[in-house]
Image (cartoon, rainbow, N blue to C red; front, side, top):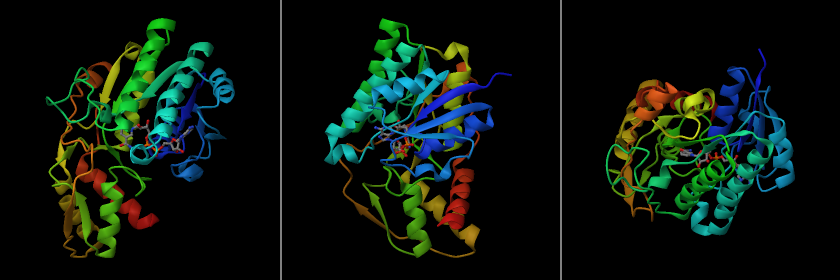
Length: 314
Ligand SMILES: NC(=O)c1ccc[n+]([C@@H]2O[C@H](COP(=O)([O-])OP(=O)(O)OC[C@H]3O[C@@H](n4cnc5c(N)ncnc54)[C@H](O)[C@@H]3O)[C@@H](O)[C@H]2O)c1
C-alpha cells in the first residue's frame, strides 16, 4: 500500500509531537517542521519522523515541503501567554503564517488540516458548544486563532482548497510543559511532588473540556482520513466539563494512590487572568457522526498516565 505523506507544522510542540508519532504508527511518512522557538524540541519524536527546522513564515521552504506531501497538518503557533507581551508576533505567525501555509497548499494542491482552538469561542454563551457557537475571542491569541480559520475558509471558497478545520479543546497529557497556558497538570504535579502550596487563578470554578492528547490526535488524524470531512469544522474534545478545583483534588487523590504518600495539597487563589474563559463544554456530535470519533481516555485515566510519566521523567 502507498504510504500517505504528511507535513506537521509545529511538529516539535506538545500536540504536534504526539500527532507525528500517531501518524507514524498509522503508516504515514511524516515530516515535522518547526522553528524550535518553543515546544519540547525533537526529543519526544519517534526516530521515524523526519525533522526539518524552519518557520512557517518562510514561503520558499513551506512551498518545497508542501510539494512533497499529500496533507499538511498546521499546528505551528505562538502561545496565548505571548499575546499579552508580544501580540504582533502572535498575529504574524498565527495569522500571516497560516495564510502562507494555506497559499502554498493551494499552489501545490495539497490538502490542509488546520488546527484552530476552542479559545476562538471565548466563554460559552450556550452549552454544550456546537461548531456554530459564535466566535467571541477574549484575547489576541484567541482572535488570531479565529482569524486563522477565516483565511483557510477564504482559500477554500476562492481557490478550492481541500481543507478541514479542527477545534481542539484543552488538551493534556505526557510531554506537557509548565510554561504552557493552562498547564495546570504539570504545575499541580510539581507542587504536589515538592509538597508546596499551589496557586489557582480565579475561583477555580472555571471549567474546561479537558481532553487527553491521544484522543485529540485521533480526532485530528480522522479529519484527514474521512472523505466527508472536507470543508467542515469539528470540535474535538472529551465532551465533559471539569472545574480546575476538581482537577486539583483528583490529581492529589491519584498522586497519593500512586506514591503511597498522604499529601494534602494546599491552594492559594489569585486574581483571575484577563481574558480567561469561564466555561467550556464541547458538543462533539459532528465529530462522532462524520469522523467516527470517540474519546477513549477518561480524566481519571489521563491523570494517572500523566502522574506516572512525570514520576518517571522529572
Ligand atoms: N494545547 C492545547 O490544549 C490546545 C488546545 C486547542 C488548540 N490547540 C492548538 O494546537 C496547536 C498546537 O498547540 P500546542 O499546545 O502543541 O503548542 P506548542 O507551543 O507546544 O507547539 C507549537 C509549536 O509551534 C512551533 N512554532 C512556533 N512558531 C513557529 C513558526 N513560525 N514556524 C514553525 N514552527 C513554529 C513551536 O516551536 C512549537 O514547537 C496550536 O495550533 C494550538 O492553537 C492547542
